[in-house]
Each structure stands twice: as structure tokens, then as C-alpha cells.
Amino acid sequence: MELFDTHAHFEGTDEEIAALLTRAAEAGVTQLMAVGGSESLNAGVLRTLRGSRSAPKASPSVLLALGWDRDQAGQDLPELDYTGVAAVGEIGLDYYYEGAPRKAQMDLFARQLELSCKLDLPVVIHTREADDDTLGLLREIPARGIIHCFTGAPKFCGQLLDLGFYVSISGIVTFRAADNVRESARYIPDDRLLIETDSPFLAPVPKRGNPNEPSFLVHTARFLADLRQMPLETFAALTTANARAVLVK
Image (cartoon, rainbow, N blue to C red; front, side):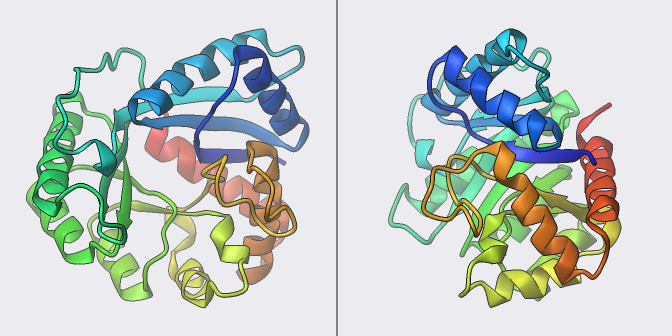
């Protein structure tokens, strides 16, 4: 069985990250994408690359995503070096919290969508309670890529699928109150479904309450395989193939 964690953030030293990667490989995670979004998260992406090289045992193949998330909107941000990077992200909009002003979030999001088109790279998008503005920008700027940690309704999911995006489900789907996520997870077609940990956040049941890590992806995969009534090995194969299709040239 091969699993692909399409969204993980990494903190800690190179040695600590190497240990996380070793546990991930032992759990069947053969590929993952380390994702940035802020100065500290972008730095963690680069430490993950170093950690993968020094892992004492077999470790997953690591892809990199760099970008500026909604919390960085309105700031004077340095240019990033996208050499060897697989995706631009995470980027997007979040209106749930009273963070950066909406216009500033949209301006930053739009600039990075345009950059992804120029670089011919997929994007990794965070969207929360910003359905209309997210759709408006994605209809205006022809980017491609992943909607990560999807928590919206099936209608919004369908609109994103119509624009060609892949939709990724996190450990939230295992939470008792996440009926809407389960409904959307059933709705996504086999060829557009992805899975992720969003570690160190959102550990799935039965690991909820612990810092999340890529090795926990198997719990989300098993839950979703049961939800979609297919063998775990089949589910792992199709989501891994989807991740490779969108992220690996």
C-alpha cells in the first residue's frame, strides 16, 4: 500500500523531521508534500528537504510547496525562489477569523494565482467561509491545482470540481461533528480525490488531541475507504495516482 500526504507542515530540527519521515514511511506514506505559507512554514519546507536526506531509514519522497497564506496579506513580502518547487502554496482566503482585511487577502491571492500560471505550477488553496470570492478569482485567473483541507458543502465542492481542481480531505472527516465534510467526501469523484494530514494540525480519530504527523494519514485513508465502500488498498492507490497526476510532471 502506498499513501501520498498532499499537505503537511513541518516544525523542529532536521533530526526531528527525519524521525517524522521515518515513521511516515513505516506507515505506508511513500510520498508527501511539505507546504509553506509563512516565513516559518516556508523555512520548515526547506528543513524537510534536508531531513529527508538525513533520515536514518527509508523515508517518503518529498515534494515542496512555497507561498504566502492569507495571514501574510498586507505585508512587505520577499520574493521566493521556486526552483525545484512542485506547487505554489498554501495560498487563499479565510474569512472565518478576523485576520487580514479581505481586500488585502484577495490581492495577495490573485498575485500568487497569476504567478502560478506564469511558472506553470499547480496551487495549493486554503478557502474558508470565502466561497464567492474564491470562485470569483479562480474563474478570472486560470490556475490549476488543489483545494486543501476542504470543509465546505457539496455545492461549493462541485463548483470547484467544475473549474478542474482536485479536492483534498483531511482528518476532520473523522470528527463527530463533521457531517458536511463526510457529505462532500462522498461527492468527490474517484479521479479528483486527495488526502492529507495538514500536520501538525487536525489529527484524525483515534489520534485526536495529539500533534498530527504524516504517519497518521492511514487513519484518514481507512475512514474514507470505508465511507466510500472500497478496499483500503484500492483507495490508497487511486488517491496516490491522483496526487501524482496533479503534482508530479
